[in-house]
Amino acid sequence: MKLNIAKLIAVIFIALLYTQMSAQTQNIKLIQEPGVFTTTSLELTEGDYQFEIANQGVGHEVGFVLVPKGKYDAAHHIKEAYVTAAVPAGSSSLTKVVSLSTGEYEYFCPLNPTAKYPLTVADGVKNVKLTQTPGKFQNESVSLGEGQYQFEIINDGVNHEVGFVLVPKGKYDAADHIKAAYVKTPVAPGKSSLTSVVNLSAGEYEYFCPLNPTEKYPLTVSDKVQSVKLTQTPGKFANEVVSLSAGQYQFEIVNDGVNHEVGFVLVPKGKYDAADHIKAAYVKAPVAKGTSSLTDVVTLSAGSYEYFCPLNPTEKYALEVK
Image: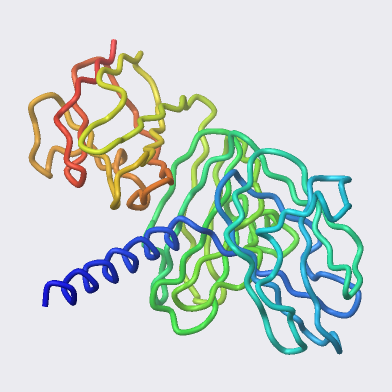
């Protein structure tokens, strides 16, 4: 009996570990047709990725090679990016998990064969997760500061593929779509997909999904927003006291080693009821281990505040605004 219980615990631990790893790994689907990839460039942020290589109409098996830019010898191939099995026509195959740091890469298939396509991993790019349920986005408005963003679109319960369109406010024609904000592949139920890196300057925008379909939601970008990064480790924040000047801020909450999702609550000092929470300071999505999430833009006037995480949980830390 003791042995069986030990085995059961081990199985549960492995399952939980796999679930956590999967939650942190982003999937990139790349389709090959005869002689080409349909996606001819990629822009990503630093992180863990798993590539899904699909063979659409190539009359023989295909593969996938990822290398640092200009280094094509087999010795330079990123071995984790090989597909786990050659991909016959009408099928797909996954790579192992590939950890990508800032830099320039190229991908190609020597079996098809294809050209070499650029893959750029940018530094300083922030991730914004937007979840779709049937007929709507859960995030009904977004406020950001100027900068580079990559949107991760999640299909939570829509029983067909969804997409993402971002436009300057009021401009809905296809010619006005911000093309970098298209998802790299339509988002199947229970899956997510990334956009390319989108450079956003101050202004008013709207986002929507014509496939779901949804209404149009406001996205505001301000030119006076400052970024504050706060890191959580098990049971605490690494930043114990924060001092700021009055102004507009966007908080980036980082989960560094907490084995479950974390969040962020900001309140006027001593006021801890949910009614007193500064709602704009909630993260846009719970923060899984090894990832980060942004809040909306928070306008802070002079005074004393406190922040904490009820999910970790942490103590309450001082945030002073002068």
